[in-house]
Amino acid sequence: MSNTPTVLVTGATGTVGSELIRALRGRGVTVRAMVRDAARPVSGVENVVADLRDPASVGAALKGVDAAFLNSPSAPDAAELQKSFADLARDNGVRRLVLLSQYAARADSPVRFLRWHAEVEAHLAGLGLDHTVLRPNLYLQALLGLADTIAKGILPAPIGDAAVSAVDTRDIADAAAVVLTTPGHTGRTYTLTGPRAVTHIEIARALSAATGLDVTFHDTPADQFTAALSGVLPPWQLEGLVEDYAHYARGEAAAVHACVSDLTGRPARDVTDFARDYAHVINPAAKAGGGA
Image (cartoon, rainbow, N blue to C red; front, side, top):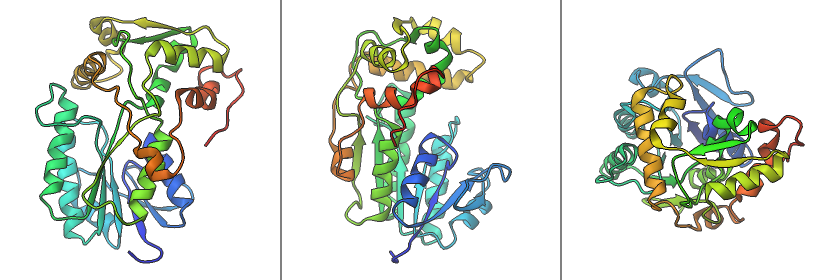
């Protein structure tokens, strides 16, 4: 790579993408944000309007790029869209591709999302492209989608007392920035987790302490969980989410990996860090933690 590589970030306005842009800017690289809506540009970086469903626009976005971060929006055909992007990256001379996959991705998984990610990983392995796979566990920031419910004192999930080594998306972004800009990661797969496995009871306690609210975990049956989100998420995504939580409930996502600290040189953020930094999102009266 050149001394000032250009890195293309897909999903640039999303939870991980927006944090990755922050991390990359801190590393002094040229960042190109791929956005679908020209009216929603990312400030402070080069923007390119492209859609994964439009190969011509993606090809144009990839011109002159040294490395690319691949994270597609949720869609039933996400695997096909990602494989197409990888092909275009190879054809356009991109030197390095970093794929955002998922913890425990495997072709024979009962969880559809894990099968889809494994399909993309296998496709990448056959392209002959310098690539690295990141497999993050459950995002702590996914809890923010339940902010209104948590503010009422309820943290619902069909997970029982199973522990999950959930990870902060800021750590995913920091790890991705390292992999995109430094050598030694070709062909590697990094599983990204928090520093410990936590139950949702422990998450509720951390949120209570940080927000000043009395938050209680409610072990919610899958059908009630689905009913509560009906109309918020499409049926295929709801079904996949229930499969995800069944995977967590079976205790299959509790292992802790050191990849975040190995890559970034600092410990992964704990659930207490997350709760402190985002307390104000759940309870505006809480003081923002301000951690970055």
